[in-house]
Length: 136
Image (cartoon, rainbow, N blue to C red; front, side, top):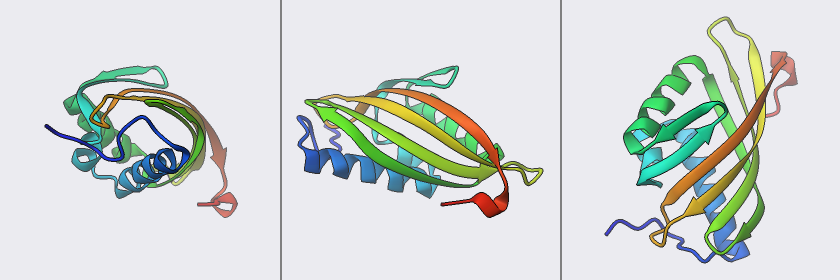
């Protein structure tokens, strides 16, 4: 059976580990590697998109990084309990025209007993910025 440590129920320490692991994985921009943190039947809401299953996650991420260039993400633990973690995050990227953006958001995560994320609900807002305003 596939397991992704640390497993729930989460302590503050293990919740922080899970958040850091997610940040590191997303910054790798490797859709296959990232998708293995999610259950095979994972359910996502990402802005106005609904994504179901690892293969849809991989396709979503491949498309994401075709348009969000030089992507860099920072996540922060917001709250946790039993098998759930809430994070806030920001990331920066630019489009093919060179316009930079900073995205701010919140995610609610729910994990199965094997430590795989089975639900991910993300609310995200983008702000156009100048390259000189970059923080990440």
